[in-house]
Amino acid sequence: MALKIAVIGVGKVSKEQYIPFLAAQSDVTLGYYNRTEASAHLAAEKFGGEVLPTLAAVATWQPTSALVLTSESCRFDVGMELIELGLPRIFFEKPLVAAHGQAHVTEEDFQNARKMLQLARQRRCQTAMVFNYRFFEQTVAAKKFVASRALGQVINVAGLVHFACWSHCIDLIHFFAGDVAEIAALSGTVSRQSPELGIEAKDVTAALRMVNGATGSLIGTTGMKWQQPLYELIFTFENGRIHMRDLDGRLELLDGAAQMHEEISLVRHTSRWDQYTASFQKAVGAYLQTLRDGQPPPVPGIDGLRELQVEAALKRSISQRRAVRVQEEFAIEGV
Image (cartoon, one colour):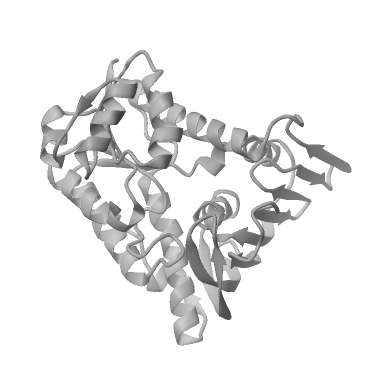
């Protein structure tokens, strides 16, 4: 099956992480839309493909799927227009919607994302997310470990996360521990800058209760230096523990039932950025394969809404100084 993939937005991440891999696929034909049309022409000249001057032209081109890789600040408007135009499938970068940037998600972002996915369901448009951290080697190994060992249920979650990895790590918490039932959060008093991201944000700390009864804690910050591990996640099970650290960090596995302590790490010459690039290739490759096979996407669009659900609940808890019942106050049933 030949695939026609419309790339919506040809910025830095799109050109470095998506388009080279897509262009290397023998069964993929590319079309490009960018708000600044000259950038689309440059991409077409370098990688091959067709320039699509408007979103209406994207729809007329009849792509198998459109990859929305624009800035998160305009993703809602672009997504809504593409759904209205009748596209059958749309794949979104993360976060799904963030009008003021990824470090400043609001309740309105969640509401808009829910509206967009509700419209997609009505129009029979299949949505998908990238969440490429699921495809890191240590994440894949951890998931296999959970599936093959008698660990029991997750009983505790702990996370220390740079805001560069924030939405991904919330997704990983969902991936391993399920949905969040209740959040009580506090914000720091000092805004810290991240020169690498060009953002400024206050630290956030949250206590979590999961739907399955597990408890947890989560800290988000821009205060960690870029040279340090950008995230650490610990999942404690009834009979074991998983500790994941950074994009290329060591994975620690404790299996209490088998009395085993195992560590997995990448070969020394592999950097965090090698793993980062490879994870995009795996995530996009997995998505393309589901298109070829006529199967549901590996990461559905509703998982992007679940991530925003947690962020919206965090913001409400901070502003109202109370615990928030996530599934009741930010319901996603029927999406």
